[in-house]
Image (cartoon, rainbow, N blue to C red; front, side, top):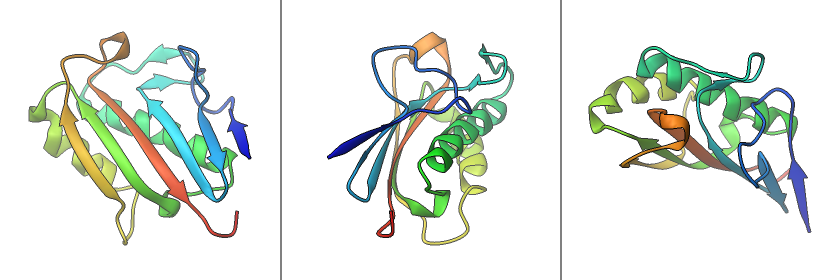
Length: 128
């Protein structure tokens, strides 16, 4: 059985999707973009600022469902330019201590609201 997860601590979905869907012990988190949930405004500035906000949104959704970043088993990072890879990777890496998740990073032609980064994750916790 699936359970829909939404939280006020992440920006409201901008389309017909949920923040996350829990299926068994797995959590599938929809792609997050750098919108500040308190202001509902895009975070503008560096790719570092954007990536940090995206990861904070991901963490808020995980937390709402009872998961943490250590439960992430797979992530996908979408960038509008691979020139952002090193900076985005530096921020992303601060959210993990060890046993890093599987991941791919891909360059795309465009992202919603013309942002530069979007991240989606899959988490697993056998105790949930």
